[in-house]
Image (cartoon, rainbow, N blue to C red):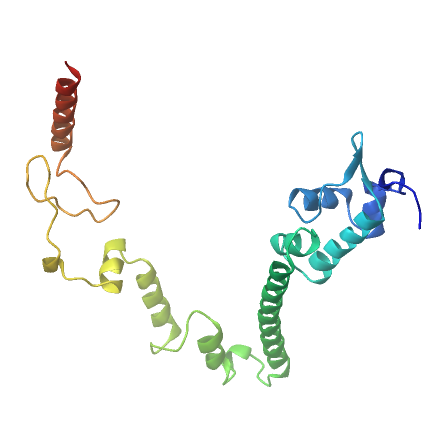
Length: 223
């Protein structure tokens, strides 16, 4: 066993540490800022990386490049600052995310195989094309006799006025919801189709209430 202190242990600078894994030095700096790597030892302004630091960089590489983990997940797994329960939970989440991506990639591969094996000279005339449109695109199942009519209907739906969308998506009985009353003039306050509910029925009522509050505050302040 060596009696050499940690400060005397062999170390390399950031360029050499990055070259070991074919990375740019800026990548190691970025990983450090994002918490994937713990701050390295310094000699003046130079970062120093010892054996254990290089192994930690290797783990970060495996998480980010091989495991395709996002930065926040790699920070949990590679930094060495997380308890085992959180560490395992993060890995399970990443496996689930990758499984979903694998399913999407498999579906993409299957569809491209279908394109290669289609016997029609024009793929849009393939008897399975409408099924593909219905299951794989926002057009969905056919609700109109042709795509031109469907496109017009989709455009009309996307350009409905906001208040009309709200009334259609969340119908409500206006009679069951009485209008609020203005605290200044005690008249009903009309509902506004946009923005927050109004507290006063007009700007004049709002100013009147403000002046009344100021007058009351002044009267209280005078001994």
